[in-house]
Image 1: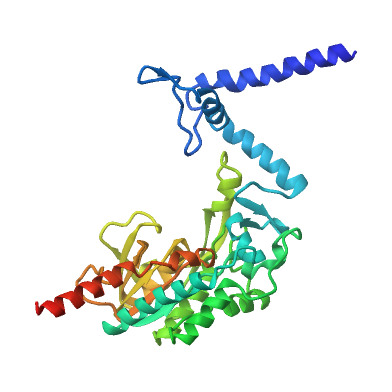
Image 2: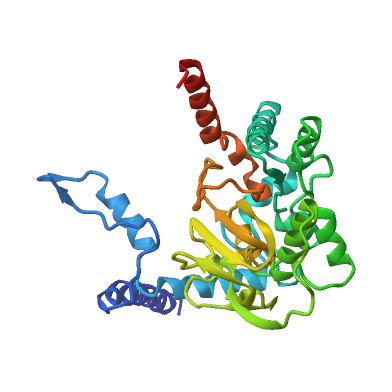
Length: 368
């Protein structure tokens, strides 16, 4: 009986291996994961010594129907063990969190004083440059999802009870008198008042409701009237980024209720997706021009801001280029939006501004 079981087990094992190996011959069955390049045994007439290890790595990321196997394994881990993978944390009540935010949540890798001061000095340079060109400035970071929903994080992660990097950075900005917007209390209040979710369950970003709260706070900070209430709302479906990282084989969507702003503004030039490096809009909103340097959180800010201000430039390039303007005129409002998890990216973000200022100084010295 024992021998028969071993024979059956071995046969089944090799049958499965053969299926996923031979299945790679079926068109469309094998789709290599990102970064998985098929190694070659002979290159430039020489045998590659590391071919075996490279092939093993490639095969593990390229075998037939890999995405479906990963989906099944992820479903088992999430359902039975409430665990994700190296990029996704499975939380409570169906919430997923981006693993890169764990250090912020636990306070396990705080920014050094030198790093914080460098980030604050970069924002100071941007602020001064905006001032010199007649623009109002605002730093408006987007909180990590687990900053707003700590109760949905698994208990095995110990929440930092001290000051976060964002708290410490805000303190330095206050000392330098740099205008900033802390949207955390607004998002927490909306959550606690039962206004519904302000972040997606299966995505790392805020949803339409959370983005609208942030956009309205930005407009209020500049004294710009919000778009009149009464806009119609519709339910849309979007695929969550964390969902895709956990389940690459099947496209799953999450519903979100959004207000319809699109009739109030138009896109100028070519527009493909909300993640374009440069997006320009025009509307019948308040006179003036707003430039917002943003990341992926800024995608959901496009409709409410574009509808409220006559001209808006949404720019993703770093280091920031405040002089970059499609019409050759300086903006009246400048916003820097960045995710809490990426605060270190602020260091050196003023590189173009410093280079431009240095060039202008040299020009003045030369009398040209």
